[in-house]
Length: 174
Length: 111
Image: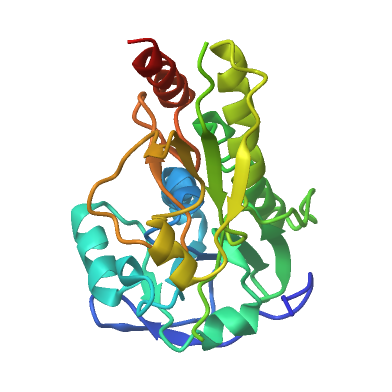
C-alpha cells in the first residue's frame, strides 16, 4: 500500500554513505524523497536530472533525500559499500541513505526506482510518481518534480499531483 | 536470404519489454527482415537466469549471440543497463546494435 496524497511524511532515520544517521527535521519548505538504486537503467537515466533539481532548489529551502532499499544480498551493486563508492566518485547534492531493513520503503509504499515523493512544509504528500514523462529525454528536466515543487512552494496543488512511477521494481528481500 | 533466429529474453520485473520488442521489430524491418518472428522467452527465476546465462532484462539474442555483450556480468533477475552509442544510459539496446547484429547474422550465412 503506497502513501496517498495528503498523507503525512513517515518519520524515519537512516544512515547515509558517510555513516551519519540522517533524520527528518522540521523547517524545510518542501521535502523530496526519491527511492533509487545503483543498478537500474531508469534510475540511472533520470539520475542527473534529479541531482540538478536538488541543486536548483537548494536555496529555496527544499530538502532532497535519496534512499536505496534494494536487497543488497541478491543485488550486490546496491550494497552500502557500492553506494559509498558511487557517492565518492560523483557529486551528490543530497544524502544517499541506506534502508537495509526496507522498513522505510514499505512505509512509503515505494514500488520502483526511481519513485518520487514530494511533501509540503507541513509534511503532507503533494506529489508522487516519476520525475518527468520520458526517461530517455534529458530535456524533460524532471519537469513533473519541478512543477510539483513550484506548486508546493507557492501554496498551490501540483498538476499533475500523481503520475505513474516508471522503473525497476524495488528488490524486496525474500 | 537466410532467416536468423531472433529471441528476446525478458523478466517481468522490468517495464522495458514492450519497448525492446518494438525497437527490435523496427530493426528487423530496417534490414528487410520484417517477416522474422521474434521468439519471446520469459525468465522467471534465478535458476532460469543461471541456466540461460541471462544477465538482465531485456536481452536480445540473434542466432544465440547477445547483440550487446557485456562480459563478466553475473546472471540474475535484474534490469539490464545498456550504454548507447551516444553515451546515454538506456534500458534497451541501441537500435544500431540491433541492426548490426542482424546484418552480421545474414552476412555470416551468405559468406
